[in-house]
Length: 263
Ligand SMILES: Nc1ncnc2c1ncn2[C@@H]1O[C@H](COP(=O)(O)OP(=O)(O)OP(=O)(O)O)[C@@H](O)[C@H]1O
Image 1: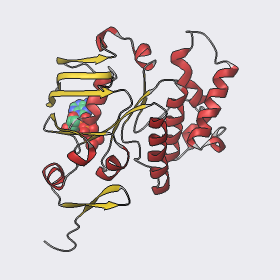
Image 2 (image 1 turned 180 degrees about the vertical axis):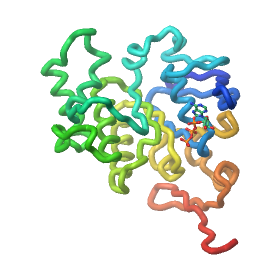
Image 3 (image 1 turned 30 degrees about the horizontal axis):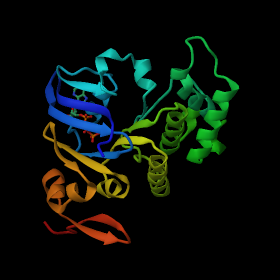
């Protein structure tokens, strides 16, 4: 059965003033998928996300959100469909964690409306789901990078949308929180949430994704099931290292070959 498209990207080209970045990207995110976007540093993963969020505009190509051109959406309307969890986030004021999480309700509120008791309840439930209720009253600005990342995930849950875009969600998380976050993504996906996330870890893509897309040289060069896409030859071509794939329990894992001291 063909899944409903949420985001469709057709022949997207984008250049910064000094360099071309995307040179004909085609990509679709469908309902219920967990898609990992892999690719080397600087290949354009974050740029593609910024284009999908309409933070920047492409010169050529089209982006569709729920089969309507992205041009026809305001930022507020986009936020009523997609929650974005950035890699880094600094806030100018000293909001508490709970206040930060309640801000996820903004796209649901009228322009001058204050959050209701119901909004507070949803925010507290989101903190609970992410396992950080103990941080509720701490100033957001004083949290560690990993704690901030978990707060941003709780804020995204509070937004009340079913599509999440995450830019390197495990960056800055300790080893345990990385795995707990990946497990949370799987649980949420089983509850009907859709994810597009960038990652530098083929292993993480193998653990949680229903589909993997690989970006290199301005294009999506591979797009398919994790087992089809993450292969030793792809790792060699994209990252310039050798790796083996091994199976542990039911999961395939990627094991880089470490040339210790060999020149
Ligand atoms: N504001 C900007 N002005 C000019 N060039 C930029 C700008 N932002 C990014 N770039 C360049 O565009 C290219 C793509 O950057 P982008 O951040 O999208 O890559 P990425 O795949 O997300 O990288 P990483 O994995 O390192 O986060 C890089 O060469 C980067 O240096």
